[in-house]
Length: 236
Image (tube, rainbow, N blue to C red; front, side, top):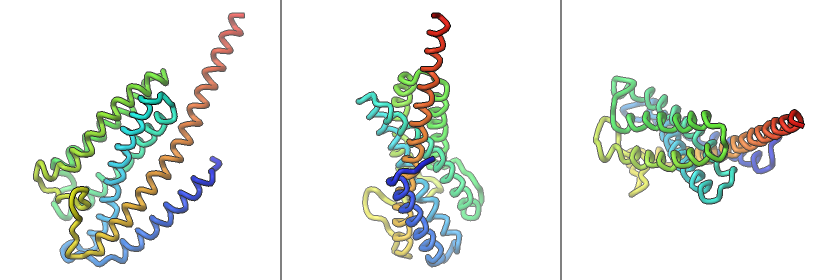
């Protein structure tokens, strides 16, 4: 795939930010109780943030499609949903690796974990429904509605640890109020850098996937036109 300048620069910035985040994470002091296991937080939390960002993007792009009927918004909505599913899986795997030594089990039906698993059902269904519809306009409309409703997952999952207290810790990065890292303030800075790096990663992946989706749409349109032309020739 030939990369444009914006994609190349965005990819370079993403790679640099991820490298800085990795170095800071590896050099951060060990936790008194968890030791090096705490380093999982520097991937787990940004992954969760990226999944929120991606699902929010799916809803936003879906809304823009409904308002404008421009296919590019539908392509971005689909791309964002795929990224969200990928990083939700990353969040779950990282969380399981962290949970086993700290909770004694890879998985518990905690409110945060349960709603995270349900998001895979919602957005997996979103992608499945898209694959079952041939009409591009109908597919885009239905997907946009599902994407908008699906964004309710983000606030519910974020607040799950406050509404239904379970074994999962409360929010590490608080959208309301200030984050607290009195024991090791460096953790807050590492998480901030990691979150910025993963945000850049989201936009890079979104751009690349959007370009590929546009090419897929163009190919589908060419195939459809070829099929219609073939029918006209046969009738003539």
